[in-house]
Length: 201
Image (tube, rainbow, N blue to C red):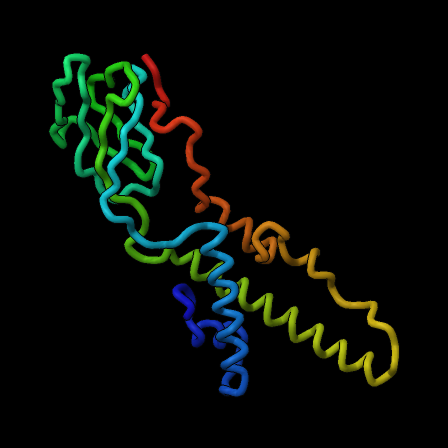
């Protein structure tokens, strides 16, 4: 159950026209799909997320999840307990942050409340290409090793050649190194202190 690239896309990349290896290819697709999700996260949108952030007298709020799809509400709680809800024309946002227009957040612990959605409405094209690449490399590595093992078995020789898996695949993710490098930008490392602003007055 691959949620990224399809069997047809992988077969096109490998120039395979018959159906004899479909089961094996699908297993590889599923395995590499799971590895990508474990490494980079799911490429889907979240329900509305509600977060409480600390105020640092700044004009930028950094939500924990990204990329941002929508910002439903931004509000501040004053010392007196009064909550001020901002109008949508008082802020704007990009993939990773909410920027305030012409004013700053109040200072205090847990005084900022935001509701937003984040994630992806569709899988990014480069992630689909990375999934195809990972599956293609895995298939080719598996096939080449099987062929070599069969040949040395016939000659009653010890297995010594062929690329070691560590040269191709990352120990951290199980993905080919080239694919892991392309997916690093999608990793969400989180923030040690939720909601610390980036630009202080």
